Image 1 (spheres, each protein chain N blue to C red):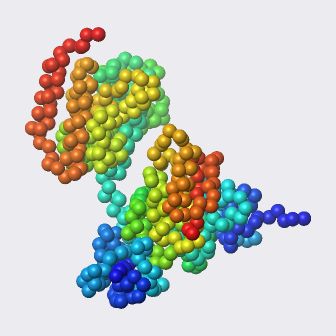
Image 2: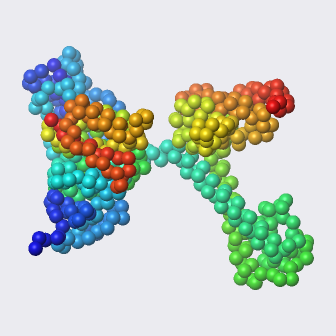
Length: 234
Length: 335
């Protein structure tokens, strides 16, 4: 009989039914009140898809979901880090306990309120590098990435998200690297054609900007009015 | 020729990526020194090494690390130790940035104003409850004119009997038990404490607004100036709003009903609190609020962009114009 236990996505992420778990880098603590559970004696934290757009995209993606995730020990860029919900799970994935996997997360956000939480998170999770800056100001975070990287995510609620995303991707993404854009329809200027037309226009803009759009995941139900664009640098 | 630089080094290379010269800084063991470098870069200034090379190669095009114009070359990238120093420095810098946010007067004003709103609404409820409560036991007490006197009396005396004596009315036949009286009295104490606290909140709003929005404070009074600033999400945004928007800030519901259903547009929002508007007859209120709103826009712009602070005379001139409007329209327009 086939085993009905959790399926391994990466070294630290498990998929159990429709629930994602990541190996807790700081055992015994939750970051945002999420559930914790032991699998084979190792503590994992539940990655809530209604709180994190990346988790929602993982739930919605078909086939091998791990293609959306960064590798362990990598440097990654996260624009629009927010309060650190997603960041904490990315830390589980690439930095591990006490940051010993060596991964670095450049977490950029422009709200001091969010940075307060991120700084607190960084104190227990080495490898998270919060930066208080506008994501468009490359001079504020560009020096943190001496080499091109393979994974970035942008989740800002500002107008002109696609243009920002293209600029950042061309600056720091290596050839073949994955770039995820979580697009919030409500942040863009509204046109009469509505949400669908907006998403199509963004997809075209990304293609013309030199990225390959591999898929567009509809996060409806988990994160309303959001799409996750999965793109690759040629 | 290209001049490349990051936070630590600078180098000059030709179009083929051949490095001609490079300069590196090795003072990165001190975190605070790295922080000041990062601040330099955040302001888009050149690091000293890049300046040095720019003098040696005046024709080289200067580009920061990561710029796509640069040719592929073996740039002198930081070592792992230097990178670790950079990581600690960036953490320190973001902590400093968060600390600096405490100086954000918009945030401080918002907390003060919301605190005063919350306290006022609870104070009104508590006061009403106390007055009704005491009135139940002393039905002869006429407290409509002097609610504060009732609160003060309750906190001072030791029983309902003494309270009756204080107001020179006959004592009730059925009084509260001593335990019940204690509850009433502590309720009265809490009410009077709240009103003292409210006064101190408003004092501190006045102090902050006087410093932060001096011209608007003179024109509108501290509470209204604070209200507009908070509702506009900060002074910077208030200074950029058109005065038509300033005029109806706080009347969003009426305004969107106007857009949606074609109802009459609102004449005023929060600005109605201004005595020039609220104490004027209804047929001139729209005209006066238009005037006050446009003057508010100018005053806030003076405050925000470092213009001259308005004087009492300037305000008196506006007051004169308000009077003129009222004189020009002494009676309601005929239908």
